[in-house]
Image (cartoon, rainbow, N blue to C red):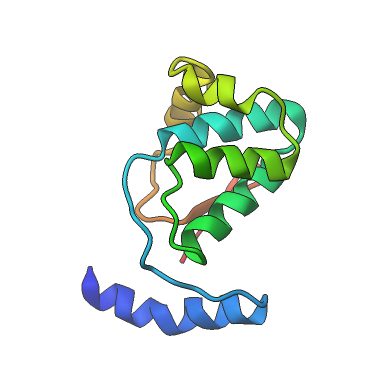
Length: 125
């Protein structure tokens, strides 16, 4: 809720500032399925961390919508991914993998962002 967000903002702002980043909550929210499909593809190329970092920077610092095709393509390009446009444009590409991850990890998640470390530890702000 709004009260919890107001409580979290100073901490999130400081954490980002400590990393040399400006935290902002003005970005569009919505369906992020295409981001998750792109990340699943990036895992196969060993580039998931770079894609996730770029998408998070786009959303949390630059107020960009991380389901926007151009934003996804730029993130993939920066990470050095191949065939990103083909993956994004094929709505079935990596959909099975994303749905499997949801079944595996979504139980018990009550907020975002939520991070799973080494497949076991859940962290949320």
